[in-house]
Amino acid sequence: MAHRIYGMSVASVYVHYVAKAEKKGRTQAEVDEVICWLTGHSPASLAKELADKTTFEDFFARAPSLNPARSAITGTICGVRIEAIEDPLMREIRYMDKLVDELAKGRPMAKILRA
Image 1 (cartoon, rainbow, N blue to C red):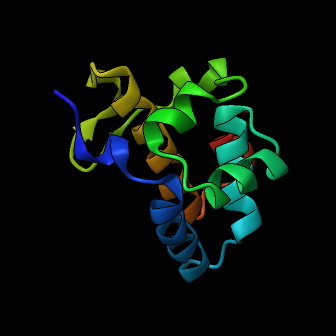
Image 2 (tube, rainbow, N blue to C red; image 1 turned 90 degrees about the horizontal axis):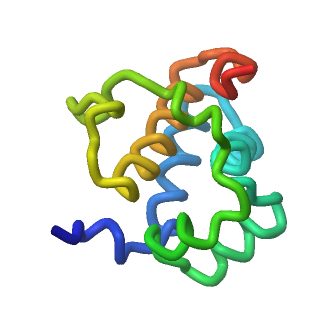
């Protein structure tokens, strides 16, 4: 079953990620850092994907190098346990949601990036 979010642009959700983080005293640069950590994008390639209004499906399909440590991201997001999500693309999207959520909750960057 294809989810509607797959066809949405990452840029359309990114603005909400940044707003959520900034509301809690974090920065757009920190949002970019966690997304780049997850996907292997550089700040420049992330900016290009956002400017091109790339869909979530294409964004993750073209991610330079999905971080192998992302499997350490556990917990719930939107009431669903991340590790129980079977759809691979939805799991990647929820990993990104969880990283931004942890950022907004004030978690130290080293812990967010599973360092």
